[in-house]
Length: 419
Image (cartoon, rainbow, N blue to C red; front, side, top):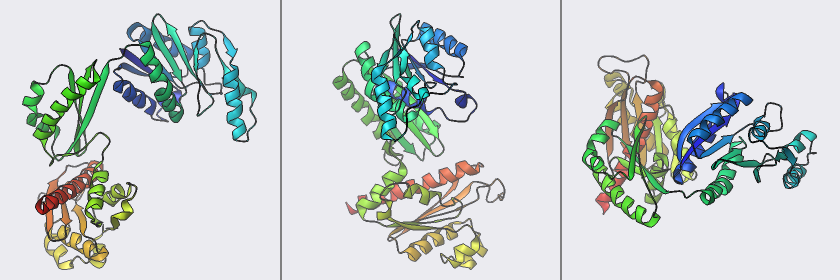
């Protein structure tokens, strides 16, 4: 079953907004065994919309349009679709009642322009919009299903999940599709591919495997398609177990929507550890990640962004002699920062970072990207050196994620030793 997604609006094409609607629809379709063939973005022009529909109807079974259903003059999608499918606009009393109720609840008088939104083509199936004023519309043509939805993301999402997917499940015999994303860190895409090569080579054609790299990590999306869900999941779990055993917990930190900050936060909480950070090159990004998790106040006490050497010395008690002898970017200073913030904030565990993130400041001995990360634990300190590269933004991300992963692995090791 193939589908096209068409987003309508000049604001997308000029870069004023990001097309998140297509991402959401494609994800929901993938879960339900619908293959997205193409994603289009077209302007608010009737001819462009018509031409795109002509092309999509030749190749796909389902076409989803978002945008252009509002009350202003530039919202031309509904009128275009009315003409395209040979319909006539009629006032839908149920939609009008919904619009009237919507504005009354907000203490606003319904304008004539708003009432016009209750006019829909007489040859469409109306999808009630419970979160806005523009209804969704379903058209049929030559066995194909065309759905037009409002462009407001939260309205569109509700309609897709609650009405569009159930409607398509009734109209078409959709295959079962099941997938899981394995989240890895600390290993590059090529090295990961080499590690699992033999396993991947013997993978059945019913499976799909995609590598999704990003700074500091690689996601592996394993998917399976078939007809019998229970049987598919049994086959899937067997292969997933084989895959995760090959890679191991040193590199796998979670699945699907997990994040390192959530995983490490849960580990800190479950073990009763408090944490702090002393950040130089990462500029507080590690603390930002940690505190982005609700409930982080139960285990995270605080951070010092010790960017300048005088702050390293005066606030977190790094001896000036260490900085003078080894330089601010060194194992010795990283460890002193970790111990200093651990003592200052009286935490069980601390993270410290110091590095050269560029684009200037590097040398032959310490090139741009040189980074020291230190983790101070209750009874030991672990420090590693990395060379992340010459892109400042990516270095901040990579160093922060690497630090959290070091923390994850150290807590794992502590627990294994206790056991």
